[in-house]
Length: 78
Image (cartoon, helix red, strand yellow):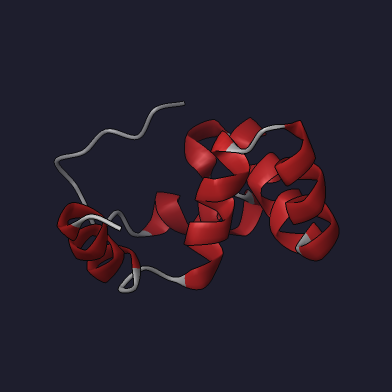
């Protein structure tokens, strides 16, 4: 392991576990993706749903986004 890898591991350790797994799913080869899908089927379903949803918002979040926009300067992509 390089020092750079060690330092990156510190950043990754601050991320939510589900975000890390979803990131792995995005870049995994076929065999590793099959393994991750088997181990984390609900995360795979959520990743697929968010990938196909406008801006990554699922239905309840899309409704809330219309009520409160925490980033008024950012225009969400539709």
